[in-house]
Amino acid sequence: MQDQAFFKVFATDASAASGLQDAFANIDPSAWNCAVDAAVLHQCAPLYRERLSELGLLHCLPGEAQDRLAQIVRKTALSNLQGLHQLHELMTRLQERTPLLVLKGGYLARACYRDISLRPMRDLDVLARPGDVAMIGEVIRGLGYAQDRRFEEAWSQLHQEPAFMKRGALPVELHRRLLDNETVFGIDYDGLWARAVPAKDIPGLLYMAPEDQLIHLCLHAGYSHGLDIGLYAFNDIAMMVATSGLSWPLLVERAQEWRAERCVFLTLRMAQVLVGATVPAEVTAALRPADFSADVLDRAVAAVQHKLAEGYVPASLLAQFVVMICDRERRRALPAKVKRYLLLKREERQTWKNSPHEMNWYRQLEPLLKGVLGLVTSRAQRDQFRARLNGARLRRWMEPTR
Image (cartoon, rainbow, N blue to C red; front, side):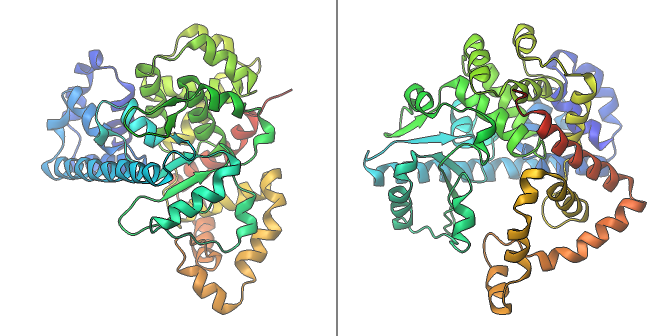
């Protein structure tokens, strides 16, 4: 029942809300609390409260659940205002020496959502030209941020710098590229920068063109995360579709130029099913791969609906380990990861344990074994594990065939 109380709220149009009211009136408080937990896990609790209000269902929640959602909305608003202040501070310190492209939440919360409190931001993602990354990093550190730069060689292979951390502030993630493995796609960075438009109130800060921004959202949710991502990512897509004034013919053309049409098609279809995104039929028809089937969409939707809990939980760890073994690209990195996390000297392990990027495999061994046992007895863990593996398989499906 808690799944219905969460996912149906986003998938139901306001005109059909009357059909939900009688059913939702009989949901017990514990199920509503689980639904709020799911909203937090999927990083869309403020929008969940807004949708309940739009559908006339907010009064169905017990008072405790309503208070909890209201508190999350207030915290989100304060956190997002803090993030906007950080962006302004950074661009002021750069003094127009170089522009930055703001990605994902930093753009969406301001430009696409009707209220800044509706779209939580866990960090600030910005894209720089590769030649400017070192200089920008020095500027950020000059503002009091610090990085964990151990294993710097490993970080240099990724699409971003180690996160810049400061107490009381959102982490800043400075990107060199949009994706780790860009050889799969053909992202046109020269065109991306040329098409960018200035943010109205923060000099030097740029927004990607709407078509570029939407394709990046699709690649991020579908390919970078292998669909192991919260429902918020599909709300982002729906909000962009509804508010950004993008050109659908240009989107189709650019997705094909970047060889990203399979990923864009699947994530757009998922946004239609999960949150009712209004994507024109001719767009999905133009992007639809010849080998697409209803089973592909079903498995993709299930991967999101059975999202793994965050942190060191058994099903998550076991799924991550199996995906790493089975995925050719990640398997090549496995020896280095084993050496990095399992063969450290004791004093180095203790230091790494307290890192903001803690990934201590020793602590993971116990829940990993519990995950094996849990799969034998727990249907929920089996469903989560299966969904995570399906997400990894679909990540391969999203790669261009030519």
